[in-house]
Image 1 (spheres, rainbow, N blue to C red):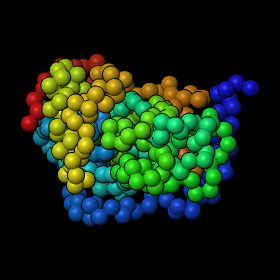
Image 2 (tube, rainbow, N blue to C red):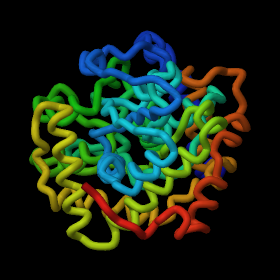
Image 3 (cartoon, rainbow, N blue to C red):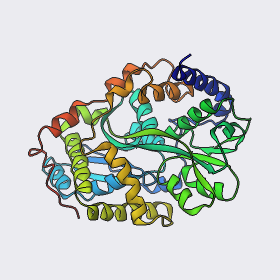
Length: 368
């Protein structure tokens, strides 16, 4: 038996055995978010307003979106189109999905798992890549993949890090003991590991680097490629494609500006750190240079033209496997086919914009 086939079968077995525990959590992408911060948000509604959901706890996504939120060219373009834009921070991608599908948001930035779930509703289109990096399992340096099934591990249910954890468990062999997998928010993981409430966690950046920097005796046990995306409500896509073009062009400008000069990146990291601190109520323990290093790894993976990785829908591709995983744990309806998600990844948007740099002012940089 090929290794890829073995891993695929074992992941399916692990998922099946854990479904009972997951279902008891009572979490679904349609659940009403309970974060008290959201009750203070005032979503202006109307044909001339676009509200965008972003994630301060995800790097480099927040660096890119903070740069976009200061893009004078974007604001001027939208003004000419009779539009205005507002950005709202959220803890989870599934929280963004809830408000987007409810109509409070018209666009969102999230990891691959929430993005695939959103696209599966057929009410969302995905326009561009926002991240190409890794999720990682962090734990004691003495902890090996083969011992993970005996460890208490923190994870965010339904996330790309959750999927990475199941992959690691399949490689290590066996299934975790009952109660060993602990659902928690990514903001709780470092402290939980520090206080020995868990023995490892599966997460994305900057949480991984924060643990490696602030905790002694920990290391990365396993890593898996992950992606993130910019996506829009289908109503906006059909009624105002020019507005979507303006936002995707802004992302392209931001990527080019960030990679043009290291001082640009450091400036944007400061913006992102300030946003994270205002959202969480505490400053990041990481330095500007450390966060910039994280961002560079993912930005290089995306280059300056973040085309959608359509090939990952092929069998055993990242998006193909993620779709099957999300379906197996009930976050995607059993009747939905992969074709629904595939057709909602609209690759021609970014192709058109990249081919017309002057029209979309891709090399005009002005940030406030």
